[in-house]
Length: 293
Image 1: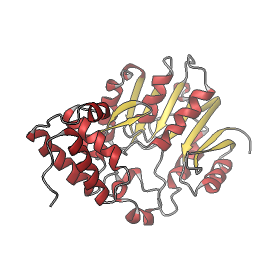
Image 2 (image 1 turned 90 degrees about the vertical axis):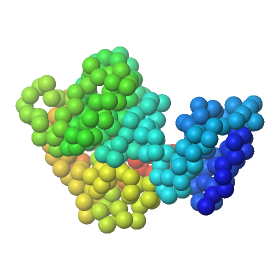
Image 3 (image 1 turned 180 degrees about the horizontal axis):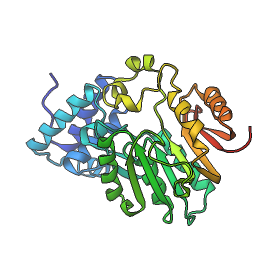
């Protein structure tokens, strides 16, 4: 059993770090600050300038519970039900993928390519929490977006996030599988940009994923079939029908899927503009547009 938490702020901060480090958590320092801020509203500057500030027993009890959950492998975002993405707050639930910083590359690519005032139409396939689409709408005030997901429970969270981030009037959510709700000859459903972070983990690899992923992210958001490519196989053959002339699509991929996804895109009649790498140097986003083989 961990020792009773100290009541003064700086000592509490050090004890949280100690417990987390003992359990092998690399981000112990950052996690300790987040826990303290969440439960006491005190931040790093307070830890430095008010080291002897007293913490109530009620707060200490909640903090110890948080530590116990974190030591057991539960991410802080799952403990508190919220995650930051592209500088915006997003509610998450057991029905949504936990947004990750690597996925922000999709937003970064788009804002560097499209004028901020462009009246673009965006489709997000497998929207989950809505983090990609809502972040894009936050950058493009004249844009409208559609978020597609097969989980009605995920879409409930996405709608809450649209309201939370003040873009609910420019966004529509539809519960369906990929394109099944659309008619390909309806010009209302031609998009300037199509984005997606689809399931791309091989099903046999899911049991050996980090506990934070395999125990807390929904399986439907992870499982890409036997080869991890099923979502791309389902989407790419129909993609051309919904991508407007001059439009492009950005798909997140696994670190070892670059060649396979490129081949599937080319087989479906798309031209490859680029493969973008994440901060670790891994292929992360395939950038394609409508073109001849």
